[in-house]
Image 1 (cartoon, rainbow, N blue to C red):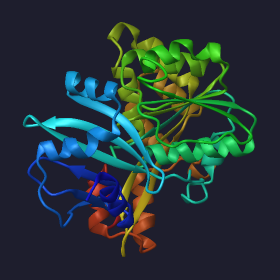
Image 2 (cartoon, rainbow, N blue to C red):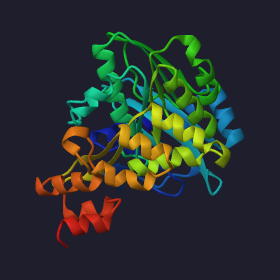
Image 3 (cartoon, rainbow, N blue to C red):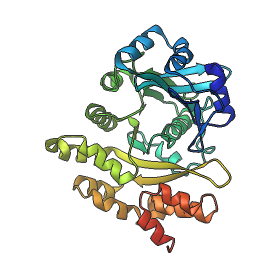
Image 4 (spheres, rainbow, N blue to C red):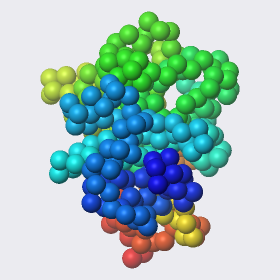
Length: 351
């Protein structure tokens, strides 16, 4: 099979990922688990022969120099894919992530209704966090789509690479790809305010400079979406603060307490009968949460999230896992496997 056929096979099986690794047959990820394709083991040279024809000369040169490459590929008859080319034991390997060609809506994702309220904010920071493959990009894309369909805004996405491609509807969309359209996240954010955006999506808040710029832009009257690889809402607060040197952390706490709108931490859990269930933990910034951030009492945020939830709209992962168990969507064993707080979950289940 050629590369397009392999990717078509992956899509046919509703796989989220395709992996090509030296001395192994291709493997696809279905509902979170890797499944080998009934095909021969590939050599590093054969993998290069599959992927290199679809890369530009500059991309091949960059890969050969840096031994890493992030890009995206579009096959009109198959779909769009995020691609990472890398080396393992000196041989070329590739990981493909399927990107749906149709941007999902919040209703299609069965997202909590509060998501539609969060995007009405004129300014501030909304974080969507979780492990790799937890659906962060899909959730943010659905929120961007909701803005695009209902509000007259200039939406700018800064990504590496661009994943979901939005067509301008009520909003005007500007997609910027790191490497092709701008040199880096930090450079793009430095000049972003001169491009008159209302909404900015930062594909990944990787470093101190990017995080600092995101906070400043959110502070100056813009709605900013960003992602972090953290597993819970309180942990996300700590991650942002800890990126900075101790002498600047008080300033960052003050900025974050004033600009943060919400933290959405999510995980995808295998459902009974196939497919995966998105579990959302939601932290909404209010006066109590902002005060805890400013006073460096983030260890108290979790208990605050459990208070007056009908009024605040907040929810914890444990509560959402219990709901999914009681509704018969997921197994207790899967809930325990993915839980951030197994002891609390077991206690609430009476185990």
